[in-house]
Image (tube, rainbow, N blue to C red; front, top):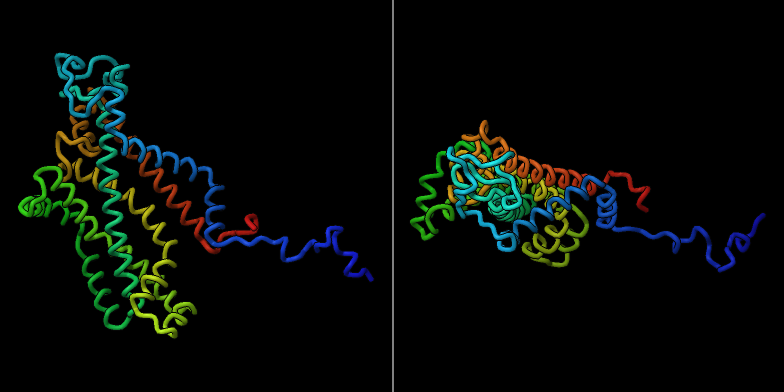
Length: 332
């Protein structure tokens, strides 16, 4: 019979000892799965590029010597259409100019990304914060608190949100202006963010509530109760840190939806208005010239589609990476 000593390597360490096995945390496993997804890496690069361009739009325009508001009549012909092919694309105007005004499309495109992403990010943060707090409270307290919150969520979901957004745009915008919000586009942007958060937090709260119902029965919560921890400590110190996985997925999938909603409202004339640079405003104006200048329609439309698709790809990849049932054999 082979002795134990014969199975030991010359360096004195057993080949199958516990020291040769390196475990990984769930976060490391998720990151390893996510880093293997080539499409997710490309999509994440696209998102970073959009965020960079939006954040430094004034600097980029200053370096290139262009402005989203400057009129260039020399770039238009006698009919108000861009001179040259493909909407007036030239070395001076990289993506051409707007029909009727001669404003640089590239400058308005990157400023439009700034407006759309600002609305999407703020609405997502506000929605996630409200839904996270209400959902974890409802799931942990249960009883009459959960019942009241649940019925309120049902009532909120029963409203036709998009129709209400359209119907209440004018009166609520005027109300915000009377409260001190600057008139025009600042009030309209504030209204869009608030109304998206008003109807969007419910979806976050329902998901968080379901996760909290499971977490509240775990050993670490029972240990915190036994040690005399307060409800606030259990909710904010024990439960919330363990909800980061579904929250990340919700954020990655909600943000592109809000960006598209802002563009849709601006397209319908209910969001930002001229002379503000917004993808929805550009799409709304381009409809009048889609036959004479189709380039003006395709440029903001393609920019919006690429951004939304990139966010959706990253969101799906994050959801798959955080799936505890995913195959981990190749990552150990």
